[in-house]
Amino acid sequence: MCGIVGYVGYREAYPIIMDGLKRLEYRGYDSAGIALQGEFGLFVEKAVGKIARLEEKTNGAELKHTEGIGHTRWATHGEPSSLNAHPHTDESGEIALVHNGIIENHTALREVLKNKGHVFRTETDTEALAHLIEEYYEGDLCEAVRLALTQVEGAYGIAVISSKNPGVIVAARHGSPLVIGHGENENFVASDVAAILAHTNRVVYLEDGEIANVTPSGYEITTIDKAAITPKVEEISWSLDQAEKGGYDHFMLKEIHEQPQTLLDAIRGRLNFDDGIPRLSGLNLQLEQLRNIDRIIICACGTSWHSGLIGEYLIEELARIPVEVEYASEFRYRLPVIPENTLFLAISQSGETADTLAALKEARNRGGMCLGIVNVVGSSIARATDGGVYTHSGPEIGVASTKAFTSQVMVLSLIGLLLARMRNMSIQEGLELTDQLSKLPELAKKTLQVEDQVKEIAKEYFHSDNFLYLGRGINFPVALEGALKLKEISYIHAEGYPAAEMKHGPIALIDEKMPVVVIALKDMIYEKVLNNIATVKARKGRVVAIATEGDDEIKNHVDHVIYIPETFRLFTPLLSIIPLQLLAYHIAALRGCEIDQPRNLAKSVTVE
Ligand code: G6P
Image 1 (cartoon, rainbow, N blue to C red):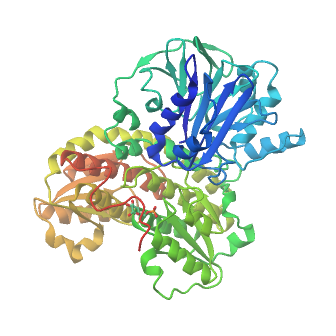
Image 2: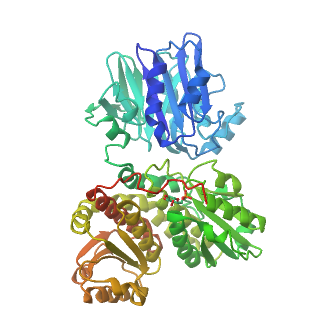
Image 3: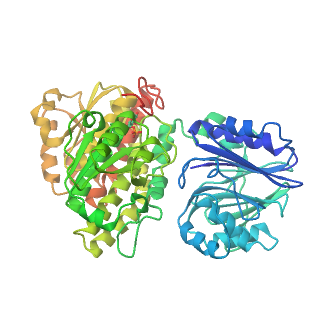
């Protein structure tokens, strides 16, 4: 999720790299750095904050180098600081590396390297890779990178330079995007086309497991097993504005489509296929403490509050621990009862929401164990907790939260599984659920295929003034989130309701003009949901059902069916929310709304 830019050629690299980094800056990265290859070795500079801060630091330096790499960081391991910013260098300071992704086995690699005399200066996972490349270096940078990568588990898009191999950038990819920009007597490397589009629109996308030796005159691509690859040059016809959004019309749509990747990033290195006990070391809790939790209070706002509600269903059913979910804004002004052995869990994408932070402080004062599920590393909420789990969903630009939500639900599923395995769940069941979780990124990808169908449904209903979203059990908070998405970006009035509760009020609203979206998955209350649907149909409401693949029966009861793949019942929110996000998006697009920045809303609400 970080930004990478590299240049090797005949022009001055510094302005090209800085310009590329600035093109990515709007995503709100936390720090940046640059390494330039010169006559007297590497020039490296880094700064916290905006690219302008990095410019200030390099001000006055004679930077005529024609080769270099730059990076904008979205912290994952180690807080945003000048030291933790990329590029990272090896022991000798002769190799510089920028990295996007997560190196899962960095702790083990560090240990091995420390025993060989390497000294580490940062808290990052990336530094281990710089040292590892040095360890393998015998005169050929590309070969050293290749050998080092054979030892790496995790995801990476990297660019590496060395003062010992001038005129070469080595780039490699596994799980994080990387492109080579094709020029004349110059070439580029970037994580995003937007960073280099001002210079070339001819690019080669590296595939997973490929490594490229990039020089001013060309690039050689091989697989990590040394098989030669014939590069396929593609012409990009996007405008700069489109390129920033990865070719999508809006950030929100881009972020909806990123979910297979962000779900993968949320479980990366955390699933345990040996005993089904997820590895969540950031919780900083002893096993004994985890076992002794008697009660959990989840506090959050907005979409994060909805993920908390899903967490309630998940954790109570899996781990049999009572869970309460509170609006942070309410919690902070009550006199909450926090008995001993209560775990307080704050959920926040930004980590800066004022109400959630205040609720967390209140819980701390009353002696609760305080953990967080946060996206932004080093944010206020992350710092105010005793530990927690980062969601690793990368910068979210669209004000309406999508990928951050599913990552939160994924992390809550991991916490539920962990607590369950500490208490009542067998190893076999733990392993089955681990297997199911590992398949969800792929299932999310499959679910996204409903987009064309959703677009057609949107065309039919985008003039409606009201929408009702219904669900029961764990599908109820999904209904709430679906309704919230629609009202946030399309300004249509939408309400989420427990399907059976509808008869106590909202039923009065139903007529032939009222679209009702029902999450009607094949579970133990499916038949009852069919009854609720019948009640809507009897009043001429129009029903859009989100149903389980293979359920043909439901077609007889509703106007439209959108199918999602089957998964373990408690994990279905991760899939069922996707068509609802798409529906809100396409309705808002048809109504010509400002999707990424809806009126009156803010991405991060830092006031009460
Ligand atoms: C704002 C945003 C929502 C978000 C909520 C909580 O209202 O518009 O998308 O869900 O704040 O934000 P947090 O960063 O704490 O998750």
